[in-house]
Image 1 (cartoon, rainbow, N blue to C red):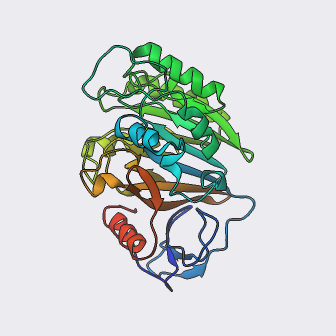
Image 2 (image 1 turned 180 degrees about the vertical axis):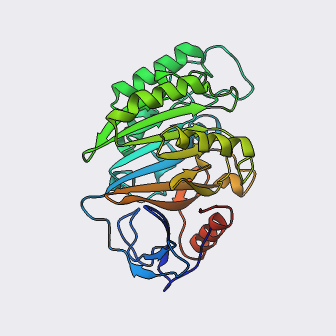
Length: 344
């Protein structure tokens, strides 16, 4: 069942059991990522009940996920030309990432000091100077489970992981390995999280390996979140094989599935009352050739005692600079997201 409507001009929350999807529209200036007024729509019966949802309580823990970050090619040129290392973040609210308890992104390539074999037609390498900027912005963790992680070979990948970890980032995932290298854990405000990064764009998931990792970490954490790199590019809906894999993860003990790689935003689904966000699209990229590749999605997960609130945050890229959308554009984007989503 999917419900989407405007209540008092404040926003939308779709509740399904312990899981709440929040399509929230700010009506006044607030701390970035928060919602000043929100309405809850209960879908536990045929009668819809509208109640007020208070602001995030101190007991809640707020995680932010953003999509693909690519810092080579035309993005690197714009940074150089601007003479501003933080150029790509300048249209976001100041200290936006720091307004959340933890922030996670997909880093679409290795951070290493030179180009190495193999040579590819699309071949990314991020200058190590970007690490300082990424740290200053307040991002906490990176998935390196994507089809560009090995662009500079296994040496470049290992160098990237080393540099990022030495800078204090949590790093997880690999382009082709699905064993323990996929896993990283952390504790945020007393909640124990496991992050798993997998890439299936150029090789299938070794499910036995992934299942062993999930089973090994499940007893020691409160929540397992999989950050996937998967699916067909330039599509607004996942294919059947992507949906099947998302359901497989939840069947085997995962609590949240977040996806990326298609470069377009894809919909949100609930499966067994667990959230799946199929594609966040681009966050920082140089794909200027279409509207869809310049529209991304960030997602805030609010972990509370009684469940998880999922808050979509649409963004727009302007010359590789992500910006939070507002007003009529925000309403349009949220309506479009609802139309490609499936709440059960």
